[in-house]
Image 1 (cartoon, helix red, strand yellow):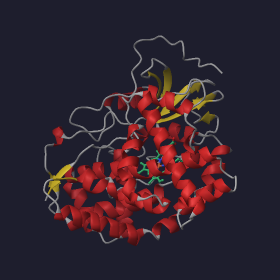
Image 2 (cartoon, rainbow, N blue to C red):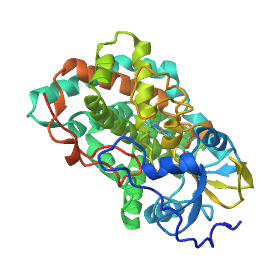
Image 3 (tube, rainbow, N blue to C red):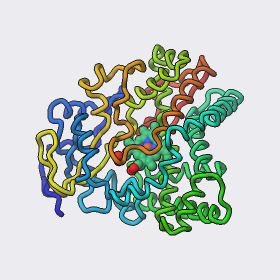
Length: 410
Ligand code: HEM
């Protein structure tokens, strides 16, 4: 299959990703919003000069997410890679089910869905609340200002996913550092390869130990499946790498960036802090997810057959990029989308994607966000930024958006 866009030489095509406007760290890039308004299915050029389709409207995005004629298999020729390191590492490393099509995707995903069921996750509430409180205790006992990323937003989801998987939290420096390598846009291919291989080797050791001494955790279940031959060794360890990485990085970014957004919107912060109604709190977290849409490099797909979307024919072999932020900031779906309004009904947002690859960990992420935002502002009502907003290091160079550091005081 050849990419019909491969020979496109029009130098005037916009580059993707596009920069955010200075001073507007929460809004999607203006150029992307303009395309959404004027040419919702349009061609963009990537880092390697390759040309792909950018699909920006909510309904079109939803249709494509649900369309199995589009593949997530990154080993296929013409796939719209985020960077060279990604292209290099995905070709060499075994894929996770995030990058597999059905039936392989469904076969592996099914093995790990039960622990993420809403009821099972809800049962973790007291434990997550206790972890949240003890991190806040430690922060309050420590020096001021504190870096909220280091003291709170990164350790909380890391502690939670470690407990769920049965990975020792003492190893957090190792896995946080290695999984963040793969999320940098400017990283060298050999760095990603080394980080991926180190994580795979680490997970293999963990799985081998669980085969010998199983416990009541997810890695023990995965190890048992590996031992029974339901999963190959590389499928099992890649599954562990995916769950460990996806389980802490994304939530960590949502917590830190969300805290910043709430500090900038004190009226919305007060609603979250003061409500005793779990429904109000749950609804508010959905709006935070919509407003920030932190997976900001777009979900990537490759058309396996000709597909028509928004009146445009996408041919077999052409790449498709679906930037969740434009759909989530579409006024027809979410009136005044640039307004953070935690009382609006934002449940239809697609910050977790949609369709068969929709985020597996979403019940866990939701619970973490609800507990983290409310507990932090209740326990530290005077929490405030300890620097100017303009000085904050935003993850514009990351595949997932957020802040590298968030200095706060109280
Ligand atoms: C606020 C936090 C989170 C956000 C915004 C988020 C976002 C996403 C998105 C957009 C996708 C779809 C990717 C695609 O369609 O190509 C996804 C998939 C996935 N997420 Fe999350 N995620 C979050 C937290 C988590 C957590 C806590 C876990 C726990 C392990 C997790 C595990 C996964 C997995 C395993 C997939 C792959 C699903 C599949 O391919 O079937 N995520 N996530």
